[in-house]
Image 1 (cartoon, rainbow, N blue to C red):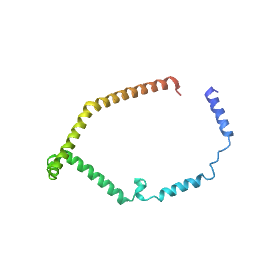
Image 2: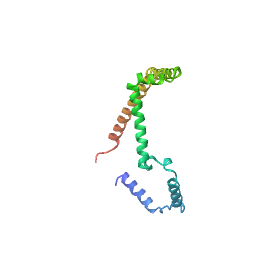
Image 3: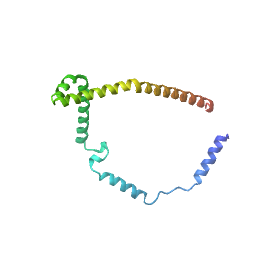
Image 4: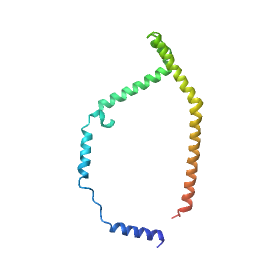
Length: 147
């Protein structure tokens, strides 16, 4: 019998001789109280998948509509959005110009600062992944015998 099988047999014998552990007597009561407390919450404070179907549909439709509106505004809404905001007077046009300026500044900052940094992080992560893959393969090949 090889040493690994002998160790496995000894550990198995020790584990079989150990007495079974019992859970605390009040554990089931505490678990059931916690479940009941969660079920007593109003539906909007529970997990999304336990909401009524109408509420999930309304939330999904509203968020989907908001996303579509934002994309449409970004692609096609530049001219009419400016006219619509400009209808608010000079303040609306100033707000719209400030929003456009902030967007351009954010895009420029991303291109100048974050994009190279993110590419560097990606490259380092790729190198680390490949190193771990190679080291794991080498470990497996050197330590495990073919059966």
